[in-house]
Length: 280
Image 1 (cartoon, rainbow, N blue to C red):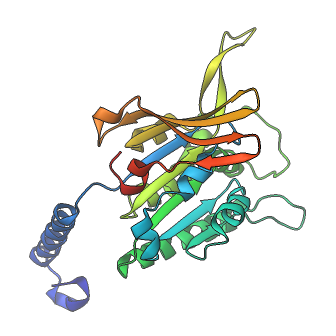
Image 2 (image 1 turned 60 degrees about the horizontal axis):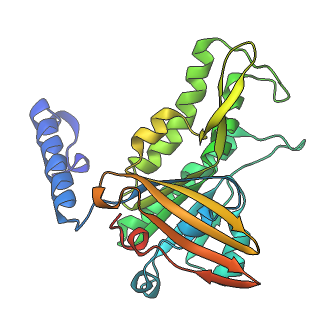
């Protein structure tokens, strides 16, 4: 039974209840048939420390052989160089920078959202046809900054103080797009953001550290959290990813992977197999 098969006076509370029950059964069956929970992973760290590279390297060799797609919603506009240099412009890695700008170069938020939602729907269409997809949202902090545009009609505005209602409007625009991915896509999902300073004191704010540049509610949606960093020792650059939290494999919490080493012009990349096969 489906909504399309019910018309006119045949629509009743009982019919609607049966439809809802059938959808519930289907959702439970789909969950039980999966061999594991889909990843919903945050990768955070300073710029140029390998976050995007890890997300692009989220497929196993078998998945690559079976043409698994990596679809990247790239608000940060930085994945293309990595894709060309390290993946030989693999056509199964699809990258979209959705930001639309007007004739003066200012972002058009409505058009940006339209393209973003279309790209997410394209991923859903691929999944519905049986295609395996890894979805990457690169630039949560950039997206949050863009959502400022819903708070003012003046695209040149430098205003800092707004009514609480307007901050809620910004937060709603930010969350709605993210939830189309966290709640709407049945696949592994990866979210990337930079760091921001944390301050104490009102009259003389003093920086006390750094945290991921996202809204706290975004962290609540993540099932795995990676801190990605780079350390330089002499001529050697070492890139590491530390699993700060995981709902799906507690034993791996606080484990650190050294995934990239660059020394004397030699580059050595070591994939994180747990990220690729979903065993994080």
